[in-house]
Length: 102
Image 1 (cartoon, rainbow, N blue to C red):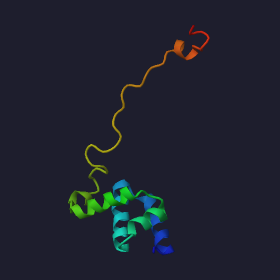
Image 2 (image 1 turned 120 degrees about the vertical axis):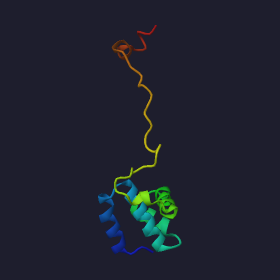
Image 3 (image 1 turned 90 degrees about the vertical axis):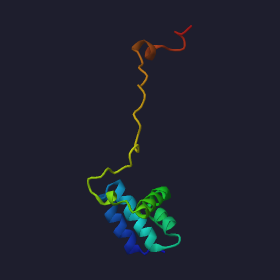
Image 4 (image 1 turned 60 degrees about the vertical axis):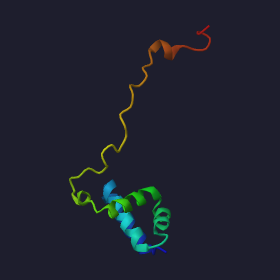
């Protein structure tokens, strides 16, 4: 069970960290709690379990580039993909009503 001091400490730290640092920090805290740590942290801080598991995979990988502050926050290919060209709506289409379509 997470004590109140630990929750306050984590809530204080999380806004100061970027996405990668948050994953690693929460994974380390979950590991320190042992069995059920991921669920406890997920519920206490309202973060996704998948984010904590991703941090655990990062920690277990032993990848030293994660420690480099200038390394990218997300893995290559991560993040939002560029969208297709948004559909353009002409002024005629926006003023068209069901009565005028007949």
